Amino acid sequence: MKQVEIFTDGACSGNPGPGGWGAVLRYNGHEKEISGGEANTTNNRMELSAVINALALLKEPCKVTLYSDSQYVCNALKLGWAKKWKANNWMRNKKEKALNPELWDRLLTLYDTHEVEIVWVKGHAGHPENERCDRLAVAAAKQFCITINLYKGGYKMRYVYADNSATTALSPKVLEKMMPYLTEVYGNPSSIYTIGAKARAAVETARENIAKNLGAANPNEIYFTSGGSESDNWALKGVCHALKAKGKKHIITSKFEHHAILHTCEALEKEGFEVTYLDVYENGIVHPEDVENAIREDTAIVSIMYANNEIGTIQPISEIGAICRKHGVLFHTDAVQAAGYVKIDVQKENIDLLSMTAHKLHGPKGCGLLYIRKGVRIENLICGGAQERNKRAGTENVAGIVGLDAALQLAVDGMDERNAKLEKMRDRLIDGLLKIERSRINGDRVHRLPGNVNMCFEGIEGESLLLRLDLKGVSASSGSACTSGSLDPSHVLLAIGLPHEIAHGSMRLSFSDDNTEEDIDYILEIVPEIVSYLRSMSPLWEKIKKQEAQVD
Image (tube, rainbow, N blue to C red; front, side):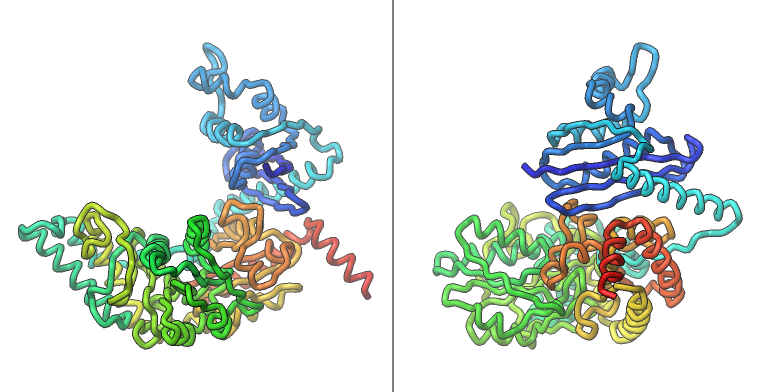
């Protein structure tokens, strides 16, 4: 069981009033800072929030030593008060209700998940980690004070959504296409009556349109799923299980695939399959010759993503496809990030299986597809019905399928104009952010998605950066633990050779056609200020500057 140290603190201006919390997690020589806050809260709620958010980052049961200066938190846990309150329906006694029951309920669940030792420390007494957490908490609270004051002064904070690689807003045009199949043509596509037949016709029309936009030879090569992860799982497990009897027990993939691929490979390894994980090098691109050198007589499938979800690098899919076809090995690509932003032709690129989803290109969540070239042996995904030519049972998501078709069509029709706009904004933002001291762009600058910017800033934590961007109205993401619930940095950034301390300071900004040049101006205005502020209280940055001074 992993041993983790957690230090927490909360702060509040006014109690109630704007508040903040901060925490430091330490595991195996690595540290992580997190913080956050609320516009109207109490000190006790912030103390609880610090502990909750820190424990929530642990992705597996751990031995935790928790340091807090809150007697409210420490005593309620150590002396069992909180459990008694819960058992008494959140009553402290016959007359008094326990405060913050929803926070205590969540904390108790996390507390019981881990082996937690509670250590009370005196606040504002020079304890280094406690003082550090206090600074994080106070800083978070001040951000809310500033926001409130600006709002009272008649200023409306700008909002910029810059996490389109995670998901996109549903296009009004897509919604318009979907609405009849949510409200009027709601029949089951397997039914023979009129509204069922109309629903079936919509599904098949969508299948035909999507096949054309992907370059498929036949509409029946398109199988609808719930999304990219399901499609990835089906592609690997379905092919490997189908070819196992022929002695094909080897898989080739890369080290920085989406976890839907990597975790599926891990599951298949437990079944006796062997997996070769290819290097992606500093620029985040798989070398086709590495693929060819890795192919064996027993290779069942090669799976290389079309474009990376974190750093946006576009892979040499045509070259890899040609190599696989030459050697008679099936080739799958996860095109979740690429579809609609890159021109795809599954026949010309020798792609045998391709995964994609709707919600990355302004379509609905919960609908995706797997292209399976005719003749590919693959096990059925779900049994129990004749849907999707007996391969995936279950009533079709008609509205979602219509939305997927509409979203892909809009993306393909406007691809050139949109990409030109996004590339211009992307490159201007990268150039501006690279002016920040000790910053770097992750991934190849040329072979990358038009709307992807992934940066690292030495001396800070990516989570702290994201929280402060959020306070400024910017929604972004990080490749580090914030996205995975892990204390470890992004496997993608580690795969391209970044050390832990740099990989932890990552930020991904991803744009769509809805973004503007004014959004870029705003980000370029606030990010340098935030980075400078975070570095001002970072022990790591202080260490970096001391080392620089010694060299000079």
